[in-house]
Structure formats: C-alpha cells, structure tokens
Length: 195
Length: 131
Image 1: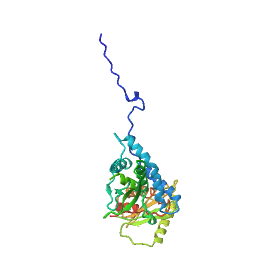
Image 2: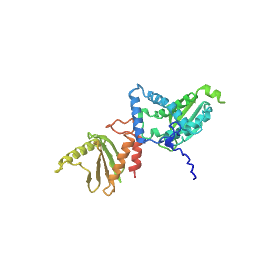
Image 3: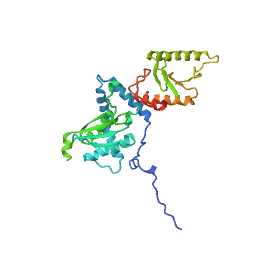
Image 4: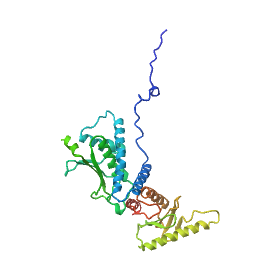
C-alpha cells in the first residue's frame, strides 16, 4: 500500500507575525479630511503667533517633527533600500519617493540653483496642501507649503544632510496662480564632502 | 445665462455677490439691502404655509428673469438670478455649493459667517458661471 506524501504548505496565517511581509499600508487618505486637519493646524498656529512671518516658522516646525518619521517609514517600506550617502541620491529620493508617498505623484522638477552652489530647488505646480487655500491680501507672500518644507528639512537633517528648507511662491508666466518652490540650502559641511 | 449670484449667511447678511452677465451695477449697500430683503421674504414665506412648515422661497419666475434659491442645512442661502429659459438651475446651485465647501470652508483664512474673499473661489465660480 502506497502512502502519498503530503507536503506541508505554509499559509500566511501560520507564519509568525514577524516573518510576514510588511504590509504596504493603504496609500491614500481622504483629501477633505486632510484639508480640514491642515486648515485647523494653520488656524492653531495663527492663534499662537505675534507677527505674520512667524506663521511659516510654526508650520515649518510642525513639519520638522514629521520628517524623520516619514524617512524611517519609507526606508522600511522601500525594497532593497540602503542609506543614502550622496547628495543627489537623497535629493532624488525626496523628489520621487517622498513626493509619491506624500502626494501621490512626483514633484515637477528638481534643479540646482544657478546662483549658489549649496542651493537646490524642488518645484510643484499644484501643491496638494495649497489646493483649497486662498491667501488674504496681507499675507500674500506666505506659502503654507512651509509645512512641507519642514518635512523635507526633517528628512534631510535626520539623514545627516543638515540644511535649511523654505517654501516660496513663484509666479509662472501665463498662469493665474503661482507655483511652489521648495528651496533647500545645505550647510557648508555637506557641500564640502560632496565635491 | 446666469446674471448674478448671492450668498447669505444664516443671519441674512450678504457674504458674497458677483455678476456674471450684463447687469446694472449697484452700490455695495444696495446689494446688502437686496440680500436682507430676500432673507426676510424667505422667512415670511416659510411661515405662510397653511400646512406645517415650509422650506421658504425656492423659485421666483418673471418674464425677464428667474431666481432660484438653495438653502443648506446650516441656514446658508445661495440664490442665483438667471435667464428665464436657463435649464437645470438646481444642478448649478449644487455645483456652487460644492465649490463653497471646497474653496471657502477648507480655507484656513476664511472666518465662518463673514464675507467671502477667496481668490480660488472667485476663479472657480467664474469658470463655472462665466459664459
């Protein structure tokens, strides 16, 4: 009498939780929920400042604490991720991977400043965080993407590329609404070690 | 053709007004007066119903224009004045309401119940209603 050998097939449920592949997570959240939350964040900041220009600083500070968490999460989720040691590597990581996970698309462009060696610019024609925001006349130079600039600063600083990151409105020819440019100014030591 | 749009807050104060067709320009105060008058008529009309409460004025038709009103659950009123032959004013009002919820209510710099000054809202309305 022959006995068939039964192969044991391990089902996902029989695997230990630490052996299971990491879930990618739901990549999208409701835009309205985000818009209301972001709106409340801005109003919260507005109630706690004395002068208009402090608002950007407050928003940026909020972003800075988000940045390192975003970096950790993306590095864990990315396949065969390694630590970025090159300046251009981390910049393109921000331009593509970070932007895709935060906004569902790549940033529109990544450029090196023609004026300064230590400055890089990432621009986005339709910044998601500004989708519903109309600036009042007295705050026309404000860009609420200061929060995003803060996130980028948090990422860069925790990846050992210390930099100052700010958000600016730049008028585009033939368009009614300006685009957002995220200006990254690296600290001198970063430029020195990256010839 | 849509002639003009009025938005009243729940107290009956005009918070937005804009013209999209060839209409006579009035003074700022005249628009506010028109808005409050409509609000009062709307309130009276809703009390006039012989059977239970009514939703107030929804449509006024005349030979030269028609006025259609939409009231939200929070008491904000949107009314548009349009050509008498204009179809589907209901849908237009619904689209305006959508723009209001997006570009006014989600704007952190807008104070609720106050006059609406939002560039994006103006721009989207112009695209929806302007010719």
